[in-house]
Picture 1 (cartoon, rainbow, N blue to C red):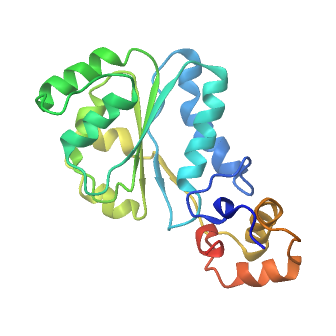
Picture 2: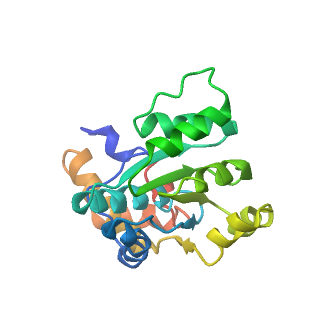
Length: 219
């Protein structure tokens, strides 16, 4: 019987990330400048659906905030305009953009508001308007983390040389999990979400059919 359905939802973020130590260390290195009071490095985070890209960022930023006063914003960008995305960044970082303020005024307010190392995560960014990246990278303290599925498609649409330079060589890939790794991920969810538990062999069969993604294995 399911006692806690939340742990089986695709948006659930576990207390600990399993089998992502190397990737978390790589992302933490990109954020290290914030520990010195400098702008975090940009990172283009990519991989297929359900491999934990957003969870990886959340865990790594949480660790960063345990050690420094760095700020962060997490914005779902799919279907949003440039103005909506920049306004949301300002809103999450403690500003008051207003719904009718011109975009240029919002950008100025963002530059004035952000005076400490800041990470801005742009989720579902495969078709992101490049002007968003231009606006955000104009802010001296902001490091951007676009999350995409296809990095080549994303990069080929970049025309601004400064944005290209910021994201060249900044890629971090998350691959699909092996079945045994997925079973390891499922086990603590089962302990939290089911009464009575489930045999490990059953979890391995679920993992084997999930195409290597944690999200598929939880539906």
